[in-house]
View 1 (cartoon, one colour):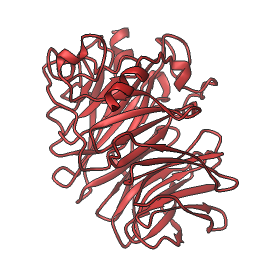
View 2 (view 1 turned 60 degrees about the vertical axis):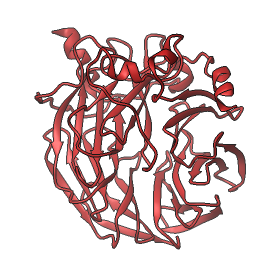
View 3 (view 1 turned 30 degrees about the vertical axis):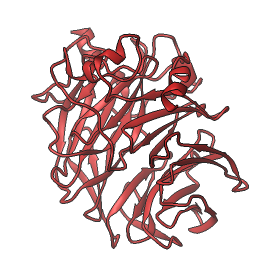
View 4 (view 1 turned 45 degrees about the vertical axis):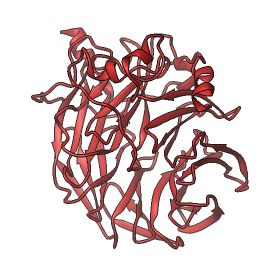
Length: 404
């Protein structure tokens, strides 16, 4: 039944304007120096052309989360080793190590204002840190089990957190108090996100549900049931907040239309070549055939985050809503790679659609994207689990290739 429904919804035509904010964001301040790495992700002229520029070492256990500073000059990585490390993207050097949690850290989020970091920890607390000095500002206490996810509001004045205690909590950052507790789900809350104006919160859970919450009242505005009841582990509002991207433990990503609560796209890359002749399901063959990098996207065990990746039109350095903009879906995978799907066709490009083949040596559990750096450079970061607790940083070299 799900396949029949998906086949209908997947015919929905989406443009970049449906996904990206109508108003372009300003360029980030500060330049990001490029360094040549020995292994490109793909060849010149491909739709995606990410080159591996940094390997960031220092964590001693699995890396759970990555978050870019708003200006794209710093990257924060959170780990089960109870620390957050802040890295310079100009030099690839460690800037600061944040210590203070009594348990592993499952999530890290940079405030939109760029001054603060929030962390979600197994010690049942949310941490608030000065991102510039590394100073431990405060602990937000109230959850009764592991805190698994955290996000800042667009105004940087509120933090939302989700926990294994099945609740979502809304915190006043300035006061350091719990503004509201929501009995959100019947199992652990695995991810939370604010929409672009901060009036809605989305949450998802191992119970397979996605719920939308009104921030001023705490009321549930909508429940989006997973078609197969598989645990939902990641959600992300599109930049325009018109759609939600959800990952689940059936190796499937789904794109929801927020207004009507319907699935409009599904991304299932475990299908074979015969399923792709009509531009249908995501491509095993496209990922591993002519490109020569092989692989099948897998997500059955870990809460792997997925993201929207917006590539600006040629000659522009920020996301725009022109027809020339390209929008992709990017996610880590349990086969130690990153996968990128074209938003509309649901195909994995034959060149550049699989990133990191042979680079990571364990599950790629954490991914972050930053599309707005100067000179058209888009940044992608990925991180591994216990057997490969490293962060890999990738720069989009398409503009350099076009100019060379």
